[in-house]
Image (cartoon, rainbow, N blue to C red):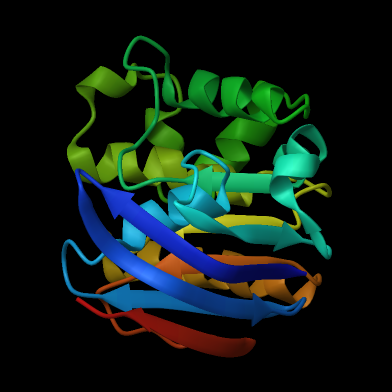
Length: 206
């Protein structure tokens, strides 16, 4: 479903990687590893169409994503290393807003149920500016617990970072469920983890 062909990445005049190719079939998790500064986040942003490669192509369902941006983005859910949430919104309002951007309408009750899975039900109506960094991270990750039948690709940058064991287990369960539904997940993680689905790995050399 997802493939990269001879990707090149140059940032700030420095080549981070070149001739990077891989293919990820449905129901598979691709783990991206590499040293800090190797280009892991840049690769994820390329896969999302947020950063143009210096060469090569990202393919989705056998076609370059540059030829199908709107259709591709409808199937994509990206959670970057930064929380990507609005401080002035409550936790529930952030989920409702994020779902709307993906073309999905949800109620406050659905948002609260997603937050509950990440252990944040009692913070549902609290402005996120009042939450800790770890809690803010869980608000962002609660998007993965929303009912969403259109997301066939999750791209996650360090989703297990700053999570306690219960929250990390919840995120991994959500990932496994999405993979079981035939989606593709691409993620970086410094923490060891196990999943039931097929796991493939690539390492970006320094």
